[in-house]
Image 1 (cartoon, rainbow, N blue to C red):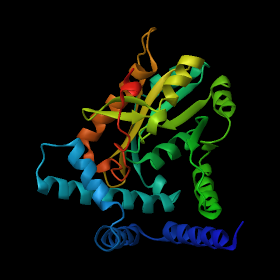
Image 2 (cartoon, rainbow, N blue to C red):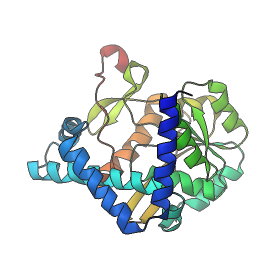
Image 3 (cartoon, rainbow, N blue to C red):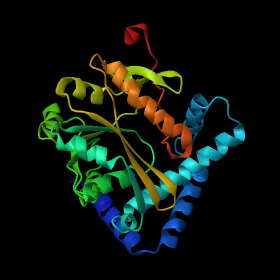
Image 4 (cartoon, rainbow, N blue to C red):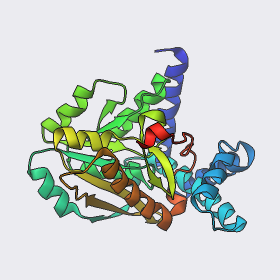
Length: 290
C-alpha cells in the first residue's frame, strides 16, 4: 500500500474513533461546518445538483430548488458523519421496519434474493441493520482507487456482517450468492451509459443498470425493492417491497418497475436523493430503444 494510502487509512480510523466517543452535538456541529464548506466554499457538483433538480421537477420555483439543494447537502453530510460514528450512532437510532415478514418468507424459500435500491436515504443504516440482524447480504460495490479509504469503508461496513463483492469481479461471485440462498444487494440508479436499458425516470428516458433484471431472468431469484428513509434525526424507516414479476417480463419491464418505485420515494423525499450524479448524462438512441 502506498504511504499516502496508509496515511488516509490512519486519518479515517482516528476520525471515526473521535466521532464515536463524541456527543451528538459535536457531530451536529461538524456536520454544519462541513455543510458551510462544501456548499458555499467548495461547491463540488453544486451546478449538477441544480441541473438535476430542474430536470426532475420542472414545475417548481427557484426558492424550492434552492431549499431542496441545501437540504440535500445537509442530509448527506449529516448521514456521512453519523456513518463514521458507527456503531454508536447506529444503536442510538430508532428504526421502524415494514415488510420484514415478507422478506423472511421469501428468504426461507432458499432461492436467494436480489435486493435493488438507489442512492436514496440512509443506505448505510439499511446495510448496518441487515448485517446486525444476521441477514446474509453481499453488496456489490465499486473499489476505490485509494486503498486506504477503500479498506476503511469495507472494514466499517463489515463490522455488522455485511459482505462485499467488487463490481468488476467475476459474475460467478454474484451468482454464487444467489445459488447459496443468500441476498445480493445492488444499487441500480446511476447512469449506465450505452450498456444500460433506457426506462422512464421522471418522464425522461434514462440509462439504467439492468443487472437486477438479468439476474432474475437467468437465475429466477425474486427481487425485493429495498429502501431506508429518514423521518427525523436518528429516526428511520426501512421498507421491503417484493416485486410482482410477470412470466413474460423483460429486462426493460422489470427495470422500469423498480425504477418507478424509486421515483415515488424521491418525489416524497427529494432532499434525500443523491442529486450529485450525472443521472441523465447518456442520451437514448434509436438503437437503444429497439
